[in-house]
Image (cartoon, rainbow, N blue to C red; front, side):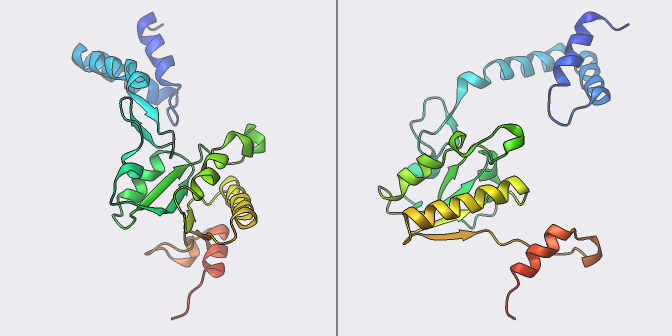
Length: 201
């Protein structure tokens, strides 16, 4: 029988994604055996999380509570005529690390998933369409995840955009074999994408 406070900490940490019972136990014991300041600092940071972060009303990227819009939209160096569409806010920072994209972003807030009860109406698709004319958008890059849900979402976006804005160029991030991977280790979905997106040499 563990002390109640330790059991409560283990249970709370177990709610985190990817954290099983044993990992939660290790985390809780680590916090206990170290300086109380470590646990207190984490607790204070988590307690203020929702009070310090909000979604941008235009791009739905994460911004500071006192900011009006995302720096990815407000920056005059950004090309508003190009929008890269992602599923979740943290996907933006993955793209930004490449330092090769200088347009704006739009976060859908997930992907279509009937099993999870996520329908198109629950995503920020209407808000994306509403940006096209005011920002004089020329290209929309769809960067949803290469999953069944991501592909379904990409197909719906492509259809809606072609119907409502046929002059807007719609592109998709290239998919296929990553560098350094042998064919024998590639899964069928990756191989299929690589064949579909093959290029001339």
